[in-house]
Length: 431
Image (cartoon, rainbow, N blue to C red; front, top):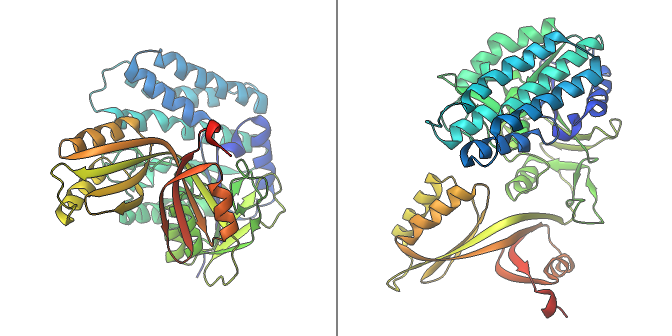
């Protein structure tokens, strides 16, 4: 039985500036009688800016503390625009920034991924404090909750694996009572902590997953993700002129789309919801009254072609040095390296003496080390600047359209899906 709890998630675009935060407050006013937990991402491009702080700290080419100070100033300027001078908020900002500043004064003993999580997690802490303070100024009762005290993970920095037993216990002990007493509960996406209390992030764009974790542990009535699009679309509107909104999706179709790289939902989001048949909505913060897209069980519908484009792809063609077949023990060794370097394989294909894989460039340093280690045992040809196009429920006309001015490096078809690794035809060679 559902506990009449709703979970909302607002991403960076929905809280990018003062006007956007006012809009979020306007949306929440319509739900002030609800038991509502609200997960919020870092503001706008703050995560990108904090990643630059981390890069500067390690590269020593820029002053990391100066970059951090600019982020702090930007949040304080927006706070003044929203609710004027507020010493309590300024103290909270200083409290969060101080340990990061202290970290940047030391040598990086624990490595890049550890430093990354301690620095980049600051974005969610600052944004949620800003929002909770503004909501209070608008007479909307709420409670600020530190997600790190609730969501527990292992020690895998940048991609923490959730300890569901500990997390469920923390939610049961702490969150339900807050929802009963304090109106909205405002918390952070993307972050948790290890049992040793080190901050751990859940993977880039992981705030959707945070909302799903809370939804699962709270037995929520529903979960809603608020986006700048009217719902889930058949393609990225930044890439394609003609896209359609999909009104209803099954869990299976949603998880297929996210697996293949659709950016509208984080890939780990669907499983916790499906496990308890919690319905999910993708709604527009630009048009809150719009119906959005419903995702749930037993959705039987016709799906139009859906195109997912992932850029920054690299193809590795791996072959044996002695011209022997690529056998099972070779593949086992190769995938052990992929696991060690946390490299997701998007597509693969093998011949007698070679094995080709397509991977996304998320961490160039990690990929470089992977390639170096592969070259110790195999011949490796690296093809960069590619894109991976996936078409669900494909039609021939859509395939031909996507192949225009492209060279197909790798192609694979199954019953409802085609994937193609492609690169641009040089302009001089186009017909």
